[in-house]
Length: 438
Image (cartoon, rainbow, N blue to C red; front, side):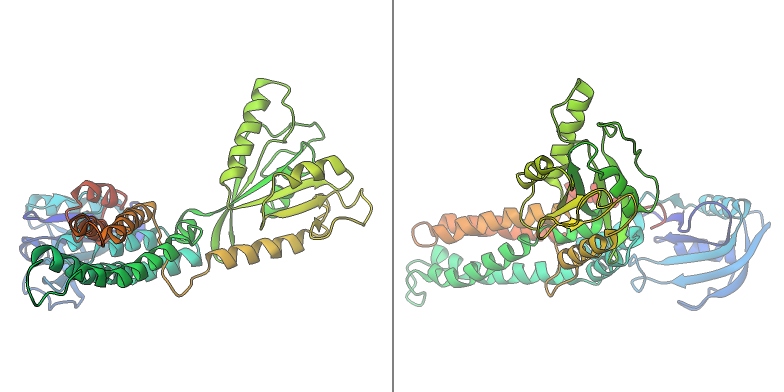
């Protein structure tokens, strides 16, 4: 934090404009040394000639001065907007190094903003997600988190818990005081129950926030030659999987990434489910079953002419899954109610299936009133806090000292979400995921 760091904040390579950022106690002096005096007015872009320590002109570009604490990092900061040629960028970076700057580590600018309490940990993660967002759903969720939606939720939980703790600690610390009612800790029962119910509701959301970040998983399952690979190709609108008349052509999982309803979706074609004829196929069937078990949605694909395939799928699908009767071009038109009858080969009926898949994705992932837990780290911390709160409530009547300790454990678990406690063990992991210059 006592050093001044610099980094290229735009992608490496040729571009019209490249942005080089620096932050730290020496940022103002480095700006003066390279861009000359007078120093620009705060947050106003000024065109300047940029010179190295030898006075050689490197480029003419815009410079911007951000005095702390009114900057992204909370420190004195500056930016050079230069022409995006590799030679220009390299010259400016070398000049900053000669002036005493240090190359920034990945995520160091955002970490300094966190250390200077400009943002909390959830907002930093939201910023990282916004940079990585590829779909509209990801953008909306990341922007909401970066704007403090999760921080407000977690801080609200924490404040409610601290209020309940006051009742518990009152009985522990002042058991004989006349102005402290008997069993004061019992007053914490109702607010703790409300808090537990709120946490349960957020955990029981089908991992919506994590699915928006990583992708909604769909597994195509069924017997060999049912048409799973043909259906995958039809949904992907390209030849993603090999299609032949030979049973067992697909041995490993073939994945296709799509965007449906503004959300990332991963559709997996799996090996045909049957008694394997060799070790390779057996491994493919094992992977297919594993992928099906962990998928958010299973689509069972059966040859519309085969009753055996249909019966086998009925034991593998659960409520909310979809059943497809394929090869409509070869089969009679009658069929089971609720099944999607189509021909993956000709495309007939596929549009109706696509519309239903999109509706399911939208229904399960669309933003709701309460913000979603967007990372596994968040879920683990909330689960730890919830377990401690349940123990706390159970111990209120007979063991207020134990209840108080469990409440403190829950407060620490919630504090780790936003970084309001010592979370050094997770900071390096969080910020190492950032790109250089951010």
